[in-house]
Each structure stands twice: as C-alpha cells, then as structure tokens.
Length: 226
Image: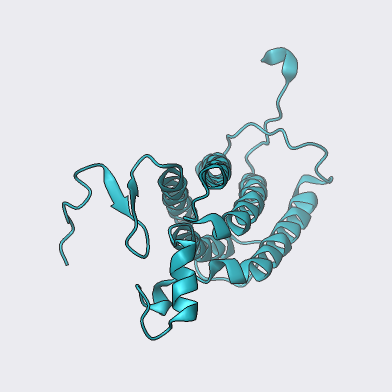
C-alpha cells in the first residue's frame, strides 16, 4: 500500500464509513489527541525498557508496567477507531449485515468493552497505589507532585498531562456533535471520556511508583516557592 493517498490535500479526512470532515473538526482534533497520547505511551515504554525491564507477572516491576502500557496502546487505537465511526455506519451494519459500507470486523467494539476495561484500570490503580504506600511509608495525602524525578517517571507524568488534554478534546467533540446534531463518534464519547479519565489516574500512580522504586525523591508543590 502507498503511504500517501493525496485525498487529504484539500484539508479533509475520512471517518469510517466514508464521511469526509475537516481536519480541524472537533472529532478529528479528539482523535489526534488520542494518537499523540499513544505516542507518549510509547515513549514511556522506551524509558522503562532502558531500566532493563523484561517480561514479568510481578505488578511491582518496571517490566509489568511496560506490559500494561503495551496493552494500553492497543486499547487507545480501538478508542480512536470508535470515535471515528459514524453512528449511521453502526446502524447500517446491524440492519444490513450482508451489505455493510465497511467490514463489520473493522468497527471498533471499544464501547461494549468499557465496563471490563474500567475494572482492569481501577484494579491496576489500586494495586500500584498499595505498592506506593509501602514504598513511601504512608498513604497519599494530596495529588500535587511536581512532574519530575527519573526519566521514566517524568515521561509518565507528561503522558498523564496529554491524557487529560485528550479527555478534554473528546468532551469538546461530544458537545460539538450534540450542538450540531451530528453522530460522528457521539455514541463512543462517554466510554472514551471514562476510559481517559481513569487512564490519567493510572499514569499518575505509575509515575509515583517509578520514582519511589528508583529512589528518586518525590517533589511536592510548595506554594510559597511558586
């Protein structure tokens, strides 16, 4: 396949099902933010790999964090695909499965998996924060930590910030779709927002864990110094 198609030279791009939209439309902005988040997750994996991470089932190892992030990248691609799928395409596939505008397998089932995905994220957050409590000697009392420390932790903090931005973009796309009565990605917005909200929490506790495990000091915000 060719890398370039020239179909986007006019400033438009296609959603699943063939609908053309402007490249700066809210839904494309949201999908782009999710794509950027995925790239930052890749940087986190690379930073963890430099610490000698190998495959491990132990939740308290950099290798396990890298495995979780690899799975996260797969889920983010599914999330982006769900956002780009017009509701009318889903309805057409359900009503006319023998004549779908796109192959049924190409339609992301991310929305139907959201309850399981949220449970997985919450379990991972709880497990890691329990490790953080052991390593730090006390439970977390506030969320204000400077995004610094070892390289892997700093990259995890950066990914957390991008995740929050992606969440805001999806909220904006949902509001725009509601205001204009369009359906592009609308049915996937609520699951995506929940997922990104929980993922940012996971990235936060991962950053804390990575710093604590590496011996890097957690820097707390001191108001009088700011």
